[in-house]
Image (tube, rainbow, N blue to C red; front, side, top):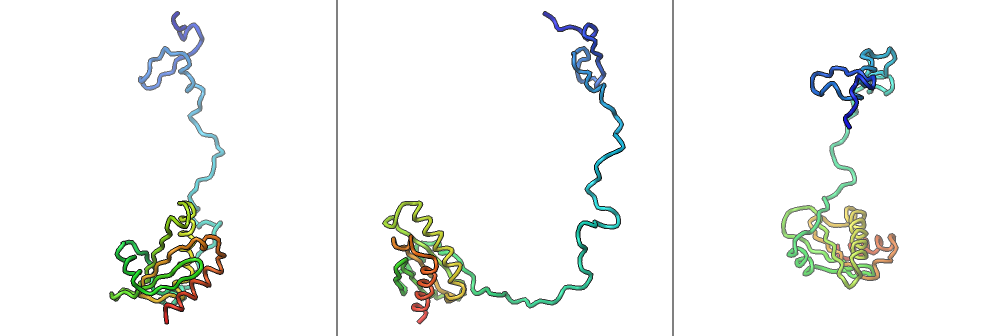
Length: 184
């Protein structure tokens, strides 16, 4: 059965640039749309010529001079990435604590950066436990090492099984005490 022609259905075909055939029913939807816009329209997002009254304007005074020295920042803290660095740190000094063992080795180079390495063996637990412990050790190093560590030193934290359930304050105290012991 053939589709009814526009004459039979009462539909009126509207020319649309010659892209489509004119005898398809339902193609006259554009005939009901007005080309004129109504008087009420939403305001544009551009600010007015006199400025945006919604935000406070910048202070006209010049900025105050500030010191250029870094506040509360000591030597940068970077990570150990090479196996040789971990092995070299193992030949340095060590400070055992209930939650971890801290290894420290002064580097011969003149780089003032403190470097930190973290290792947790499979004896401590599965992957979830080891990753959780490493995240805690990373945060512990960020919190304590810049204030209590020495520049130009490689530190390695070796996780122990008892370090998983240690309180945060106890871990911070142990790391500060171990750093003080290694600094002597």
